Structure formats: structure tokens, C-alpha cells
Length: 300
Image (cartoon, rainbow, N blue to C red):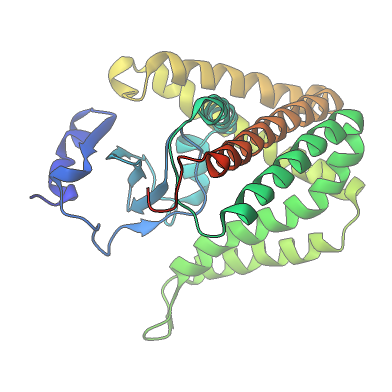
């Protein structure tokens, strides 16, 4: 059996994704693969791992690996702009939730869980909560926006400071690797702490400015790569071109019609909440039906 890393050479020759059946490689993965907690959702993914620029999605039967252009630990800003554009994150999130929701409604597999009664009840309750949250967003979009940014902006700054601080300081032995990154990381963290005590009306322009910068950078990078031709975008020329155009439109709307863009963002968030709620509710009810099936037992 081979190591997974030995099969990833095609990624450096223009191939977008390598799909490797689990039974053909050594399991578990090596220590260099670090589990990633924040990722763009994708259908069927059980867990996600990173190793430098390698980004792995684990499914039930295979490993799907692609090569990010930027390592998020070393270049978090460029990684967001190029590898994780906001438009692409929204498209993939909605697609993954819609796909998983349909599968949950059709699923008839037998799943063994500890404390299954509590599990299905929690899933159903959470699903109902997400559905109600989606309805609330639609009914009070601007109030919800103001409430959310008082949480999102501080978390965003603090999360963004972590990669800079992590790369600037070595714990063992304790020393500063990069004074510039340390100052930048501390500055971003202080902005996050300061924003905790700010009012929503003060944070809204800052949030929209960050969003505009992110989407404009994504548009610039995506369109620039698309203009180089199909060989420059192994993940898909049409998709990258569409992401670039939509990102540019979004950036321009943020500057010229900010209230409209807030409404659009809230509708998108409401849609994601509803899809997630449907998925959890369907999964919980499916688990309950399996538990009530007289032919079902915990030993199956």
C-alpha cells in the first residue's frame, strides 16, 4: 500500500483534483495532515485536512485532494481572495446543503448511534430552530444584520489575527520569527477587541468595506486567471469566470447600493439556514423511523 502523498504528483501538472479510494492507501493519514475546522462545505465530506497547500476532503470511501494556490497558514488573506472567494463559498454551501437535504429525505440506511433517542430529538429541535431563524431573518433583515455584525466583526478580526500570530511566534523554543507579522497580528487582534464594544451602526460600514475588499480582490484574481486561458484554471474555466464576474458585481453593489446588498446577504443567509434546518429535521426524523422499525436493532 502507498502513502497518499505519493499519489498527488498530478496536482502539480494541471490536474485539479485527485480521487483516491481509501483501500489503496495507508490509513490513518500521516501526522503532517492537520484536520481543518473551517472549510467550504462539499457534499459527502466527513472531515477535511490540510497539508501545506494540499486540501483533502474525506468521504466514506475515498480521499479527494486538490491543491490550493495559497497555504491559509502562511497567506490567509490571499487564500480567502483566491482559494475561497465569497461567491464560491455561498454557491458551494447552498449546493452542499441542498444535496445533503435531498439525500437525508431519501436515506434508508441503518446507522448505529449511542443515545439515539436524544440524538434524533436534538437534530429535530435544532432543525426547527434553524427554520425559524431563517424566517426571522426574512422578516427582520436589517435588525438581524445589525445583531450579527456585533458578533461577526470581532470574531472575524480575532480569527484573522491567529495565522499571523501563529507564524510570527515559535513556542519551542520561545522566539519571534517575524516582528512584522507579530505587529500585524497584534494590531488585528486589538481591532477585534475594540469592535466588541462598538455599536452596530459603527461596525456596518467596516464590515461592508472588508466585504468589498474581499470580493474585489477575488474578482481581480479570478478574472486575471480566466483571461490566461483554460490551462490557468484547472478547477473549471466557466466556474472561475462566473465567480470573477459575480464577485465584481457584488463589490460594486456594496459601494453603490449598500442597503440592497445587505438585503441580498440576509436572503442568502436565510436560505442557508432553511436548507440546514431541513437537512437536520429530515435526518432526525429518518433516525426516529429507523429506531421504530421492528426489524432494526443496535447490532445491525
